[in-house]
Image (cartoon, rainbow, N blue to C red; front, side):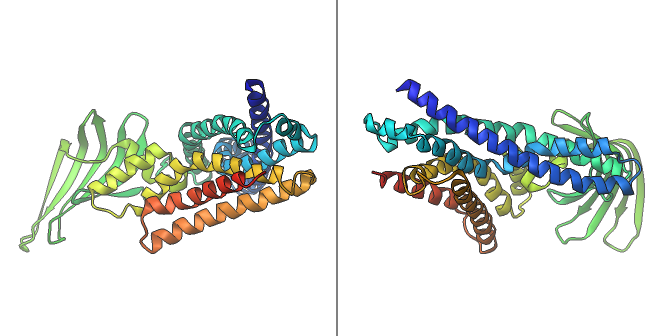
Length: 357
């Protein structure tokens, strides 16, 4: 049985990785072709820069396509085994469809772990680096946070940061303090803000105290000023990254920040649970392929199986996105919004496998 498990798991993993590679390369080629046009309009953005940007974007594209690739690869790999009557031999030897499904799921576990590694450690860092480098070359700005920087609410203050360096230093920090009556009381500009453990210090500080009793304002200058803040360079960097590109760890830290500042975090909670649910969705997709292999598609061509897989995979992707966004708009529980499509897919796969004779 161990040899059969390894054989089935290897067939699944090899074919899924093959499909994933093909889909990722197709997406990369399309992305590269669109980047070639940018090289004509920006002299500092060469063809090599476009190719490097495309390569660094590939891990995120790979992560996005993993769910569809698992279904297509499972249909392709197990379908070939069924076409050669190898699965029929296993069934004739007394191996149940459920037992074959468990063997295939062993390969699915390997794929789920691979997906988590790409989504948590490879894709976010690579995409952030790609976008920062492209912004420097195309928009001719060293600042990776945008022309206006990023804005954040820090307890009762509003903070604007223009750039972040790799040494835990913020550059171009504007702080606007507001009283409970929502009146501006202090405006501070600091050339830099440095972090050392839990302590933060502003340097080269210029500020203005605004008096609310119509008695004018007073200006102050400080070489250094202690800064009590919930922010840090890592969190500031997260503000400049698209939510879909954040890892589960990044989303978790972002949610903590939003809750500390009493901000609406439902969208980010749903995105966090969607990240957690994705490995389960991969296994559910693999399980869903089993009934088609033993059912009416057993003797069908590879093209037919791939077409069915594309329709199911794209259908799940669209339904998952629509349900999660609609749930957030209508105030549904973010956990339910993220998990319901995956649980529905898993239940459908389990029921379909149990109906296989």
